Image 1 (cartoon, rainbow, N blue to C red):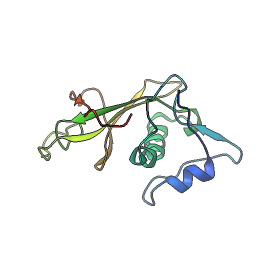
Image 2 (image 1 turned 45 degrees about the vertical axis):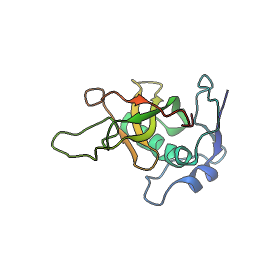
Image 3 (image 1 turned 180 degrees about the vertical axis):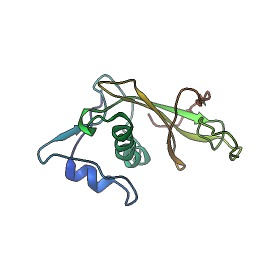
Length: 143
């Protein structure tokens, strides 16, 4: 069982310069991964880097405080193309397999938010009506 807790200082240090700011209280800890979620291996660095920005986006979309959000599920997958399993109408995407993750953020007072991420291709919020199936992750994928 893996539980990740970060101080606000550590969280802000992990955010890329272009990420949205995250509200923190001085003494708070941010439990990012729900205690029920288990992982066989430690999280890859790419996932560590993008999760704070995903949580900030989920907080903005849901109106919930970042401190109340949890990554309820993180699943390694292979996306069938550059849309990360969430194509937008009228856009073209690279036609190559993209290793990544399906991430579900639990929101205490609303429906869970679903995000699709690539190991090198960033992440997108993916509403159910746009989601397409992923392929199983490669055997050497982490998480």
